[in-house]
Image (cartoon, rainbow, N blue to C red; front, side):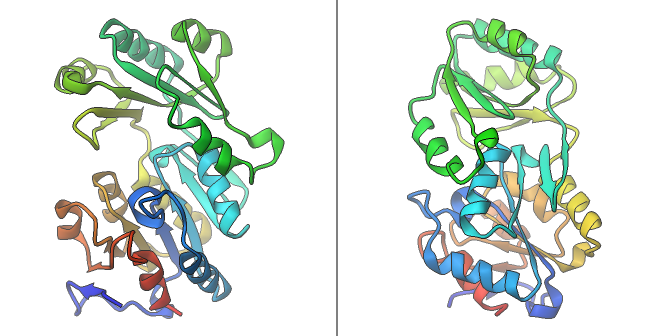
Length: 282
């Protein structure tokens, strides 16, 4: 097992020091093929059996995360939309983008002629859906009928969002070379946080929550000290998770900025990094 402890005097990774485990999905729990290995599933169940809480924390829609959680073990909880919707032991809380703001953003993106998606609780609307529909259908089959995600290709996005009156939790812009311009145009809009993970994509969500604030709230609800929370991630949006977790573990494939903030570094998501980390708690 390759786990590099960066600050040994501060980190004691044992059963007693960890009561809650927060796992990112893409680049972390998911392999490069967007799967969860049998070894990772077994390690998660082992931690649950020892009384630890396990929460999936992702930028993906909550119902997607819930489907992934259900495929592992019914005891696994989930936080979606980069912290803007969570349901922990049956208690739910969500902070969508206001409809007025969502429509303003969609108008802006429409004027700039970029590919975009709008994600509500039950639906994904967009003009760039060909790659995600099978992904959602495969995962949400673990959810009951009333908790499925429907994917729609839109021709009149503003009208569809206005008519549905569904709260929008996340907007994605595939802006290509226009990313810098889009960042500049979005900057004055209040109430939103803009994430940029790739050179061509922007993700927009409410600024009321993020992965860190959602984990804080979940830990408080469960009566768990943040010092006893292990956060595991790979990308820059996991920095907010690292800001609150008492123990921070970066994947071997993580960004250099995240690794610099980590207490320890496990293997990559292609080499059972999550499983190896959690097995050290068993």
